[in-house]
Amino acid sequence: MRPARSRRVPPLAAGAWALGALLIAVLAWQVARYRSSYGSMAGMHHHSTADALYRAGDGPLGPLFGRALLTAWHLDAVAVALLVLAAAWYLTGVALVPVRSPGRRWPLSRTLLFFAGLAVCAWATNGSVAVYDQALFTAHMVGHLALVMLAPALIMYGRPFGLAVAASAPAGRSRIERVLRGRVVSFVIAPPVALATYTAVIVGSHLTGVMDVVMRTTWAGQLEHLVYLVVGFQFFVLVVGDEPIRWRLSAPARWLLLAVAMAVDTFTGIVLMQQTNPIAMLGAPGLTVNPIKDTHTGGAIMWFGGDAIMAAVMVVVVMAWLRQAEHQADEPGWLEQARHAAFSEHTGGTAQPPEQFDEDDAARASYNEWLGTLNRRR
Image (cartoon, rainbow, N blue to C red):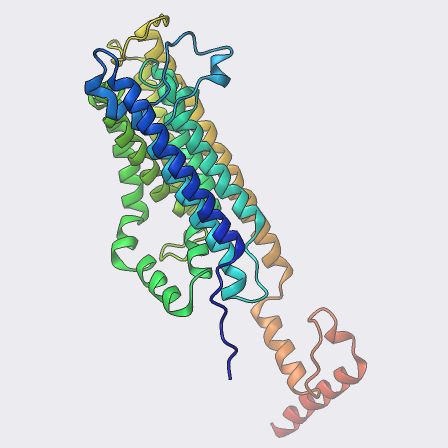
């Protein structure tokens, strides 16, 4: 009889969800408090809900560089709530892996990378670049690079889909794998589709009038954050992930995908650096901005910053490829494996490592005797 499975929730999972529920309750209280305070201020009632949900705590802006770069913040309650839920879900999966697969533990390095990606998301939506992202195009561009490149790459290195499979019961595991390898998901993350989507979003959001709306409208900025993350996941799941999906690209193919995306970033950055019409930005008391210079600087950040992140990922991909090639070089080829199998079969089932089995004199004599028998049969 199979031993009955424990239905007890692992302590790590229970603790993660308890802490998550507490944090979301605190967020709800903060939203209500900020909405109430904004609603009581003249001229702010119309924008109170959006400000309380996405930009609570904003104050007068001064120059970004200096102390404000580290200390300026606001509360994007929606983003934080989603990040809390993602963290609780991931920790639940980590806790369930040993339960579903006894003797197996989820690698700590993957957990750390996943949470590093969540931390980048938190900073890009709540930190100084988020506070200034409607008043400075340069700050907006830094946040954009964090959300469309850096955070998705780190999160995909954490293998969230692989964790979902490993932490599921057999029935759920097969369902998840069918979805991940199904036609819809396979089409959405197909390399040409992912690259086309990435290009359309990067070029379309920066070189058209879309950015003017995003810089001036709170809800449009939030939608942009979501789109950047989704497109980043769609692209980097092919490049850095080792997920249970249909597309398994070779290292050169991943490198080529990164190179093409880098060219898109470079093109967009150069065009922005040559703009004669600045990106529209909201004015902020205490902050003096030259709009055209800020637009050009944002283009330079797009070019050099985007290419630097892509180049760093390229280096990681190449290093992983070289390690894999070195490991494969240490393994015997198929011909050597076949010889080893025949040797073991005809020398009494000797099971020795391939590099040692030729050193057994008795086994070698038995093998030669078998070869002589084959010759005599001819």
